[in-house]
Image (cartoon, rainbow, N blue to C red; front, side, top):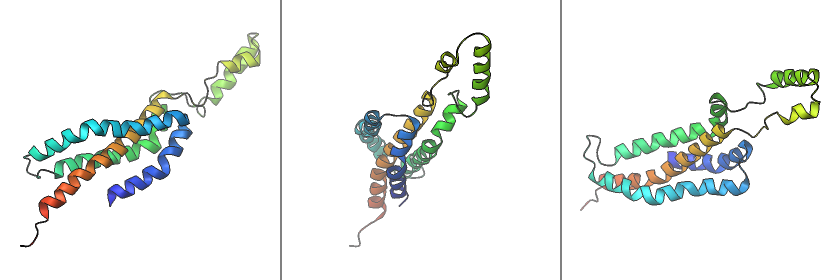
Length: 164
């Protein structure tokens, strides 16, 4: 049930968040293609590891727990990716309004016209760290939710013994 709630949140919020953060529509489709591409190669490997796991928790539970933690991290990164990007040094237009005004007054006093000083202002959608964290959250959420379904089904088959 938790995976389905995660899918619902992903369907509702990821595309608008990616568009809001400055990813073009054409590039957004590439972001959506990353997770299935990774899953194509990684899921058989995870399934093989799950079949051979000998931990005290069982064969499937460690994978379900780890992939669920990945889903939670993805759910946290997607809405907070832009803020994390600002924390890592991306340009934040809200926190630089005073410096922009100061730069304009310095530019006017030094003989540079206002239009020339405005060209030096970094555009609003220039935040590569924010895009990185948001895309990472999208890939984590989508891949981990998809990859968690196989061990969950296998776990149900392991514990449900038919009455004979």
